[in-house]
Image (cartoon, rainbow, N blue to C red):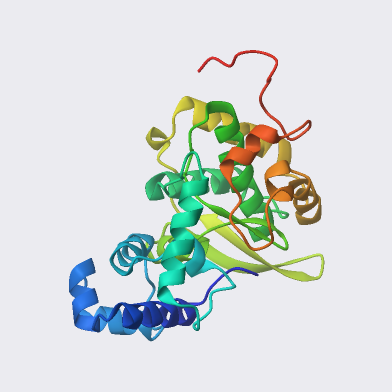
Length: 266
């Protein structure tokens, strides 16, 4: 699917940025707490990198995960440009989302528990259920649910670093990926191997997720994609760029989940 990077691509990008920072493999590996052979395997595309390791690398090499995961990433881009672009993006935002990895994993597991058995719930539908859970919660409470960042891609909003998180969850035996035929097309699907830890979800968070599942989990990929394309955050964003959470406050019916005629009490 568009926007999903292979292990080889991830490794190549890390290699480029490490060299531009002037660090050896030994120096970078030591800085992020892994062995040099592990980093060699990551850079060569022979080992999965988990999201915690990727976040540590981004701090050491001073790059934006948004730009790093972008399909428009260029090996010819100057390193300083990557850093300045990240700073510009942060300065534009009122509230910068920070990915809560454990929360994201449990939200994903919870949605799969409820929906994995439905034949329509492949990657496209799953990503939209995550998106609407995150953005609906932010519109209601002005707080981030998972803190995941979403990019505007052709099939709709896609969570950043979703491939890294899913690969890690597969390796940890939390979920299983498989291919299934759905009306003549090969569909990528996931099933949960463990239950979500509901102690990680507040009652308000679970309520928002449940409403999204109730409303949209039976929709086809085409219907939910079309619906997401009419959502203000999507419409106001540029192709390939991050979708800002603050745009949820400009939603209109039927996408808006908040009554702006009354003062909302948390």
